[in-house]
Every structure is written in C-alpha cells, then in structure tokens.
Image 1 (spheres, rainbow, N blue to C red):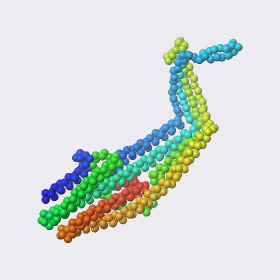
Image 2: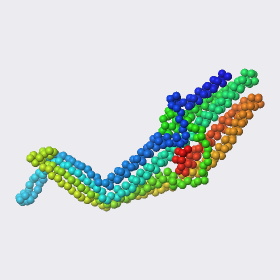
Image 3: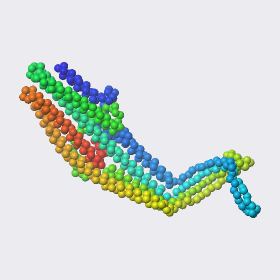
Image 4: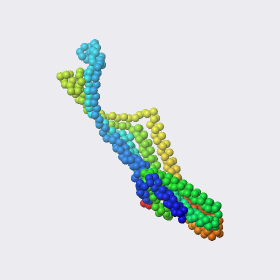
Length: 454
C-alpha cells in the first residue's frame, strides 16, 4: 500500500511538472481553442504586423507618385564673394572709340540672390502610368497581407494539432503506466505469497522504468511543440496553455466541390504582379513620348562692393528683381536602342510570370487532389485504428484476467499492453493526418479564414 501511494504521488508530481513547466507557479493556464490561437497570432505575430505595415506604406507610395503631378515649388538663395572680377575685352566702337579695345570688369565683389521657382509637369506619360501602377501596388500589398494571414493561420493550425497529438501520446503513456503499475502490484503480491517468480517481478519493474523514460521523452516533446506553437502565435514562451479535448473532433468535408483556382490568394497575387509588370513596361515605353513642363521663377538680387545683406545705395549696394516664365519641351529622338532593349526585357518578364501562373494553377490543383485523397485515406485509417484500439483494449483485459488466474504468461500480458499502446498511438496519429489534410483541403479551397470560426 505504501508503494502504491508513493507511485501515485510521483505520477501526480510529474504531471504537475508538465503543466507548470516554463514558469512554474507564476501564471495561470490559458485554455486555447483553435480560433483563439489563430486570432491571437493575427494580432500579435510579427509577420502579420509587417504585412499590415506594407499596406499602410503603399498609401504613402501613392502619395509620392501623385506628388509628381503637382506643382514643385522651392525657395533658393545664395551669397557670392568675387575677390577677383573677371575682365572682359570688348570693341571700343560701341563706346564711340572705333578701332580701340576696351578692357572692362563687369560685376561687383558681392552678389546676393534670393528667389522662388516653380515647375509644373503639363504632359509626362511616366507620371500618368506611375499613378496607375501605384494603385495596383496598394492592391498588391492588400492581397499579400491576406496571403500572409493565411500563412500564419496554416502554421498555427498545423502546430496546434501537433501539440494536441503530443499531449494525447502523453495521456496514452500515462494510462499505460497506470495499468502496468497495477500489474506490478499484482505480481508483487503473488511473489510475496510464493505464487510468482522473481524474474517476472524484475521484468515488470524494468517495464515501468522504460515507460517512465518514454514518458519523460514525450513530456519534452510536448514542451518543445508548445513552444513552437507559441512562437508562431507571437505569444510569450512562458505562457501556460491548454488545448481542449474537442479540438480533435473529426468532421465531414465537402470533397466533391472543385475549388476555383482563380480565387486563390496565391494566384491573385501573381495576377497582380503581372499587372504591375505590365505597368512597368508601359512606364518604360513612356520614354518614347515627349514631355512638356512649365517653369517659372521670381528672384531678387543685390550687388555691391560690400556684403549686400542690409546694404544701401549709399554704400554702393543696389537691389533689383527679375522673373521668368517658360515652357520646357523634350522630344526623345534616339537613345541608342536602350529604350527598346528595356521594353523587350519587360516583355520577357511578362511572359515569365505568365508561365508562373500556369504552373501555380497546376500546383494548386495538385494540392487539392492530394488533400482530397489524404482525407479519404485518413477517414478509412481512423475507422480501422479506432476498431483496432478497442479490440486491443479487450485483448489486454482478457489477457490480464488470464494472467491473474495463471492461464497465460507475463510475456503475453506485456505484448498485449504494447499492442494497446501502439494501437492508441496509431489512432491518434491517424487523426492528426486527417486534421493536417483537412487544413490543406481548406487551404486549396481558399477558405483558411473559416478556421477562425472553429
């Protein structure tokens, strides 16, 4: 009886350690459904946040492109000191002295200029194309944000079920340890009464030791898998989590529905990339078009022998203003076939992404077909393994009773226990394969976000 109590305390202590590992005794256990895990990840995972920031940044990119169609106004000013003024040689005829040459220094030692200039694009094909491309860029990042969310959902769901499997294996091994301990107690009683051999007692003690070793390994696997799940959720590693039993229910799937590949986020993202490459080609072709812009400026200049700032005519400093308005027309004529080469490169990029679209469609169709096949196979396997586990349990009960009555050997009993453990683990693994295939099936139908409702 003391031995049984001691084992019970030891088992409870190990179980408590598995629940409180990481940060024992400092935080309550948080129960997580799949929906809660996914929503937490979408709000906290860095990947999801960065994708949202890219969407925000696309708005600023549009503003940047739009600014090129608006007036560009700038103020300018300078202060120049000329220690040596350049001398200009001119014909003296203009000054009433024909046949002579006059050397004159034009300018003042100090010159200061301040003014405002304006440039307005009137016609620039690259600006018009850039505005269209900028709006497509915003849509690209919106689709990319959706794809990132789907990737986060997929990773969290996969790891969520992996955690569940490891915990189920821990439950199975705990059950095996409990049953084997009962058998050990029976053999111990028989041995004490001279009805069992010492080798049988030693074998069952070794069996319990091996089970405890396996349990510790599974316990470590649970902790590692939980930490991986928390990482993909963006959750602090020290947080204690618990997954409810209902998370592994097997439900029916609409396997007859063929998904529309054109609605898949991966396909839509490539289509948007294709559109951006089209605008890129148009932007390059815009180099063939002339550009027309308006330029205007107003300036104020001060000149004199001393620094003009604050100077007056009494000191020889004079101020005057001047302005200009003009049109600037640029007509490309020949660029050495450079523009043509760039256009052809852009055309190759367009043809390349078209091939990617074809290949992506085939890949998405393949993923759906494989997921559908895996679902069918998993359902059959789950049914068989469930029946097998139930049969193995019945065999173990019968074998245990026969062993107590001396009708079978300890080897048969241990084999029956191993068969039940293996059958239970196979059943759990079959459900895991089903749930992972279910995720891929939902993904192939473009419905990953429906997992947030589970």
